[in-house]
Amino acid sequence: MCYHVQVSGNPDAYEKRFGRKFHPHFIDKMKKLYHANGFAHPDLPIITQENPEEIELAQWALVPHFAFNDTDAKKYRVGNLNSKCETIFELKSFKKPILERRCLVLADGFFESMDYNDVAYPFFIYPKDREPFAFAGIYSYWKRENGDVLKTLSIVTTTAAPNHLMTKIHNKKLRMPVILPREIENMWLKKDLLPEELKALMLPLENGILTAHPVSNDVNKSKVHSNHEYITDVFEYPELAGEDWIKKLLAA
Image 1 (cartoon, rainbow, N blue to C red):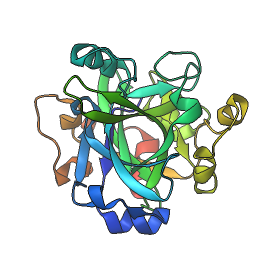
Image 2: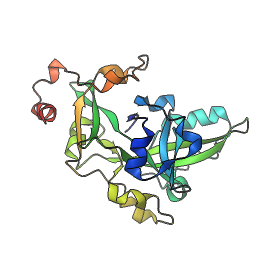
Image 3: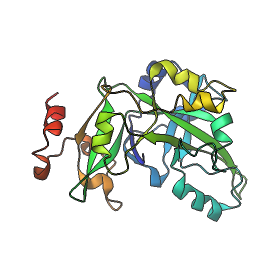
Image 4: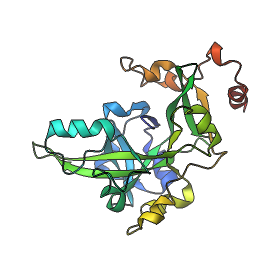
């Protein structure tokens, strides 16, 4: 799954990478998120089907349009940080957005944990070229009890295999977010795609694009405020010293 990401907060970098300008309403609200914890529902930069020429912000954790009230919305949010590609066309919260409201969720990296002797060791995962990238996402609108309209998003996930890096890191659940290769980012935003066409886009990223390194376990501690620059520093765990594949990653 994907519950923790990094967003550089640099509008110029995103505008250059994705060839779009920030919507004026959102550019001053863009924040640098060294560690964005999905359960805190931060605002993430997105590019939508409705407005594909601009970058805007949406809250992480999708609230479906049919949520009755704030309590109902909170219940849905718990399970809607991610949307599994295997069930996205069937579940009530997702089956309309996947067909009509897809988006690119822009980021610089994400965090996942490896299970080693029943202990979770977090890794920071990012492209080798250190360029921003796009998760496949969906979004929805929900009208709150006070009349405000909330735009929320969910990051689509898929199986980790055959991505070698992700199967080693996320070795318990064998999942990874759908990261769209540059050449198909705009395809994800194309209107009127059929389910079979969309399924062909929701695949594990090919090998060789991502790299990773272990980071502080503060990422996994809900009571620790880890949105600080140190959180992506390499953290050495003595118990992992014998893992040759980790040594090779750090030496690359």
